[in-house]
Each structure stands twice: as structure tokens, then as C-alpha cells.
Length: 126
Image (cartoon, rainbow, N blue to C red; front, side):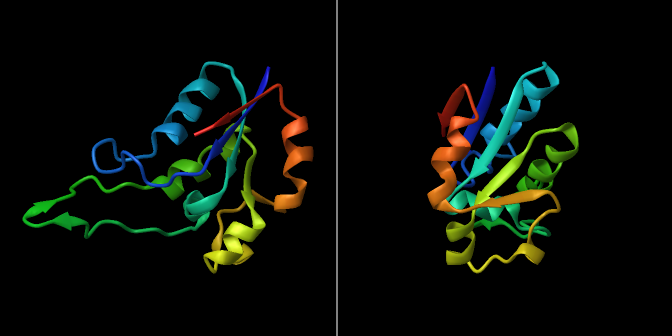
């Protein structure tokens, strides 16, 4: 069964787990043989931007010594055969252009989402 993981809430669990839990589970499920794709929308389209650096993240005297690298985690899905889509309008609202994104990220217009959804047996929204 083909499953589309829609990720809309960004940077959850990145302080303790060092990556987004849904990106992580998508890697794990793909390794187990699942047929998956990812759609980034809302604030999660920021994951598609290359070169993010959270190495200076600190809260008072507590420093994050293992900063999240969600953009790299996301980019690593593409060579594994996981299509990654991002909503064009959400990218534009955040000032992200095609040249800012990891190679292989497919842009999809908001109006074309029903057609995208129709190509999957299951759609999970996180």
C-alpha cells in the first residue's frame, strides 16, 4: 500500500531526538519495505531548505551539542526512493525558491493536492 506522510508541524522533538520524528519514522519504515512519500506543507516546508545550521542553539547555559540536521535527514530520503513534495504556495510564503531546496524536492501547487492524494492508498497527516 502506498502511503503519503504529510508533515505540517515543523521542528517537533528536535531538541531531544535531534530530528523530526516523522522524518525518522519514514526512514525506518522505508528500510522495512514500506512504499512511502512525503509532502511538506505549512512551516514544515522549511525542512526542504539546504544548509540549515542549528549548531549555536542554546537555552541559557544549556547548549545543544547534537543539533538537528532535518534538511539532511529529509534529503537522504530521496536517494532511497521516497518522493518528497513541497507545497509551492507555502514555500513562496517563506521566501524559499527552487535553488534553495535540496535536489529532488518536487513542488506541487495547493490546488493539485487532491490529485496527489488520489495516487495513494493511505494519507497520514502529522
